[in-house]
Image 1 (cartoon, helix red, strand yellow):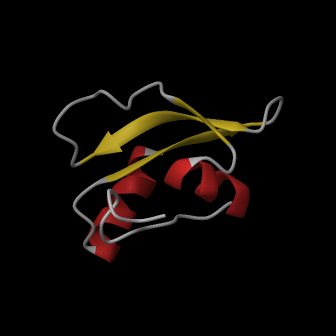
Image 2 (tube, one colour):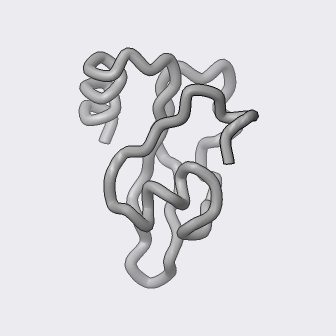
Length: 73
């Protein structure tokens, strides 16, 4: 996971990337790896599928990005 996030960060130029595995028993993802964040506040956060950027990525089963997280919908 860490190596994949490093490749994603380098290849995309994104300053912050995070990820985790989709839990098969529940439609959710638990964030386990962070890169470029100032704190570890997102670590172990559980995100329901379809909720937020991480939840969108879980539904689509691919990386997702926004240029301005606070302003995006």
